[in-house]
Amino acid sequence: MSAWTERSDGLVLSVRVTPRASREAIAAGTEGSFAVRLKAPPVDGAANAALIALLARAFGVAKRDVTILSGETGRTKRIALAGDPAALAQIAARLYGSEP
Image (tube, rainbow, N blue to C red; front, side, top):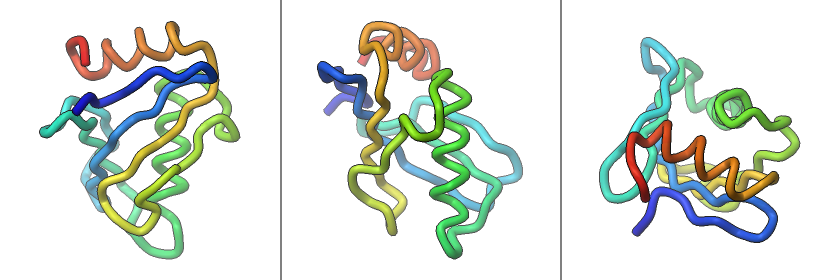
């Protein structure tokens, strides 16, 4: 399984979120997913909002271009990013530290 897949309208990421972390970060995780650490707690959608904001900043897209496809209440999520697939894949490779 790949940490990301290209689509005609952007990219789909697999992420594993750790809420209440001491700092926010995106890195390569295990089992083909990104490991995302968030300061926000998993209460009232705060962690999901923080995840969307962090991914939007990291990938240089608007928050409206980041959508949680699945896993809204769990730690493992699939996220859609709208934009140029090739450019987003380059950023994903840099963040992940390798090719998918």
